[in-house]
Length: 182
Image 1: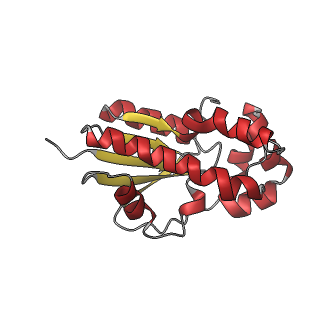
Image 2: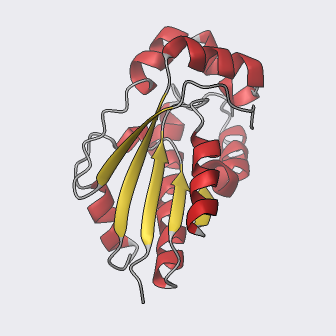
């Protein structure tokens, strides 16, 4: 059996992660795992139920401390289930909260029983003005906070300074115009 591959597509909202991740999944016959599609409705429900604005995740301490870890644990667990079946996976999520943890992927692979696999992190990069324009154009509720606090958002999420060890990094400049996706 061939070693399954893991592609982790990272970048800020509007950078084109989804388009790149879907193309990668199709090209490699891999399972496409989008954090927002897997957990999005549950996250919105949890935030509303706890009395929080579901469109403000970036500045919400309750979300960052309680909900975000569950989202990523769920994503990594589903990835592990696919990898154990010998199926390559493409993970579509920002992962920014974990960039500064060099052994994040090693620990997640252990915790969720990933078999040996080859991991490539695709860093989708886009200039600040292009990114802001894309967020305005797509007009999603979840981007409202980002746009209202643009300088703060860009300072925190515009960098892809990921310190993960044991992976291959692939940088992709995605300045070209992409179709708007939700």
